[in-house]
Amino acid sequence: MNESILLELHRAAGARWREDPAGVLTYGDVPAEYAAAMEGAVLFDATTAGAIDVSGADALEFLHRITANDVRALAPGRSQRNLLLSSKGKVVFDFELFRHEDRVRIAVAAARAKALVDALEMYHFSEKVTFEVASATSAPLELAGPRSADVVRAVSGLRDLPIDRGWTSASFEGAPLLVAALPVAGTNGWRLDAGPERAASLWHALVAAGARPAGVVVHDILRVEAAAAAWGADVDENVYPQEARLESAYSLTKGCYTGQEVIAKIDTYGGLNKRLVALRVSHDDPVARGTRLNRLDEGEWRDLGVVTSWAYSFVLDTGLVLGFVKRRHQAIGNEFRLGDGPATATIVSMPVRSDAIAITGDFEAAR
Image (cartoon, rainbow, N blue to C red; front, top):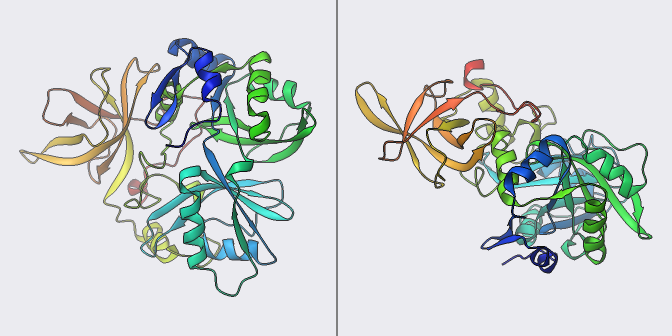
């Protein structure tokens, strides 16, 4: 089990904890934590994230050739979401990539870091490139909300903050502090990393500067309201990037990479069998991942989709799910029955929250 290094800090503060997967559920007041994300600054523990350093004379070209996004065009001090795809064009790994002057750092779940290194090594032949799992050097914290930039300035000492996936180095307690402008749960936010030794001190400093601690309950609410697909919930090895609306994580113009031919064909000819949508639920009880979405079609009840994520939506004041629905049934307003019960789920426009990062439109409708 991949536990946060701040576990004891959270427990001492009275946070409600879940054991599998390990993480803070809430600090005890979900509405207030959500309000902080809407009106102030909300703070999340992301210290279970892992890291891989890719270095060597050929590091940039190697990653550009293998991964789905345009690594070669990424300048130092910039980051991007990126994917490693299978030869069939489906998502095998989903990660953040940070360009340094002397290396590229990949941020991925710590539990998947070694597997990603092994996958990259499969494509490594004579290139001058090395891979090192560097999870032990990383302990990021994440912030979101309209006042989060003020909190970051107060703690980092920076006047001019990076924007739009930019990142820079500052100082915290005499040590390097990474400050990155990254999406957090589908909304504009920040990732700060002062390393494991100073993670607790950084947490306390951010709270003292006005950030409100929160757990995965609010993180999931924000993410689902933003219709932001997440690895392990909405994205796995059975999903094409376009199905999960991951257009920002791959390039259509960079040239060849693993899976590129399939991605290009889908973009040119369409033909996706399913697409991620958001559906308003007729109640606010949790809906299990894997619940089937059934709909009356030509006089028969048919299984036309599956739920992948659930959260209570403060915007809609009811349950909200993300799920994959088959083509011809993805129109806003289409109603489905949840499993075999009486509850229903109706497709809504997404994202449902105005401050969320805009996602791509209806792929099939554009064909």
